[in-house]
Amino acid sequence: MNEINRLINECGLSKVNVAKYLGVSRQMLYNYLGFKSLDELPKDKLNKLLSLFGVEKESELKKIKVDKTFIEQIETKLDNDDNILNKDLNNLSGLNKKEQALLSDIIGLLKEKLEDDKENGYNTLKYLFYFLQTMDQLEELKYFLAYMAKSNCLVDPLEYIYNEDKQYTFEGILYSAMNLYSNGRASRSKVIETHKMFEQEIASKKEEKLGRTQELNSFKTQALNELGYTSINESNAKEVFEKIAEIMSRKF
Image (cartoon, one colour):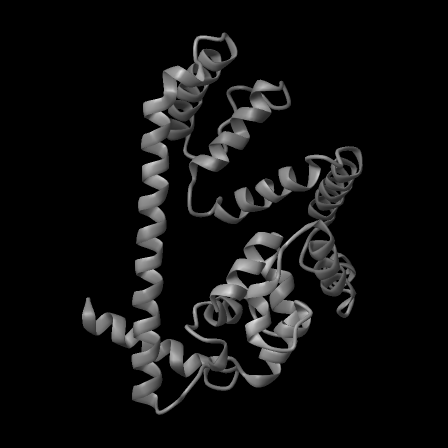
């Protein structure tokens, strides 16, 4: 699955859209991407994934070089598959009028950014997408959004809708850092060591994430063996996940 993961990441594809393209839940897609081999995939899902990337055999995936044209081709396939985007935008039954209006404004603004900035617009919004994906894992990201709204006079500086003490502290620290940067008192030469520490921390996180993935794969393999299955599919997913949870509880 390494090549599939590589292509999804290099193309900056939304896993939500890829999951919908395959006709599975996002959690099921994450499970698929954690497989060691494409052979573990249900045959129909494997064929659809290969079709998405325009190949017939797994061996051809390694030859794919991702460029702007290739990304556009993939995104066209995703967009045209049952008109995913339109279906999502039209399915707003779970949102009230205020939430629908906010979502409409956001979509309009994002579209405008993409149209006006052909050079960096796509990558900027891709970073924004990653930001939103990780926001539930790091509460400080919400504090950062609040700080930016306050610093641009869009909301009251004394508004605290999250944890007031933590938000207040974070805003004070960020204000000092932003002033240091804006006033020219920081430079690349002055932060070399700090940035090296940052790079090392990222490398450590990647290694830790890889370790967790390998451990989860081990749990999955054990669960499949104990249940007598060879792979996870829609019909046995719930049973397999429950068995994985049981195995993890036995270990810890």
